[in-house]
Image (cartoon, rainbow, N blue to C red; front, side, top):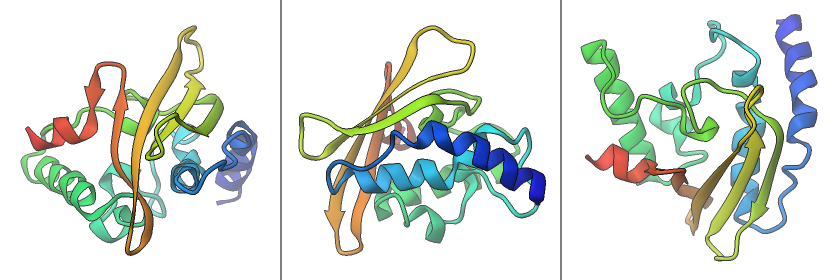
Length: 158
């Protein structure tokens, strides 16, 4: 456990730019803070579950119920069939492998959008993601994530 803690502490400065500037940005910043460990661990241990495999209850801490259900249904399909169902990448990292350098979370022009920008180690082009957020009875939640040529909600609804 101690090596994991040290590794996470080394990665967390990369997330220092994720200070929320507007109410909707806090949920996105918290998501990256809570799952920063994915960038430093090759395989999750018994104590850790990758975000896209978390149970609905955990997913609903970050995502609205509709998106949390779709993510959980896809994970259940993959577990049942032992194959990729609809989602074959990690949306918060914009690809199949987690990794981020210089991650920044900021409010976008639209009130319900949050921008995330980071560099994937070893790549020249930055990764840019747009989160759609909405305030509900349990506070701000993520309702969608979009990247270069993809939209999470659209992928999961197919």
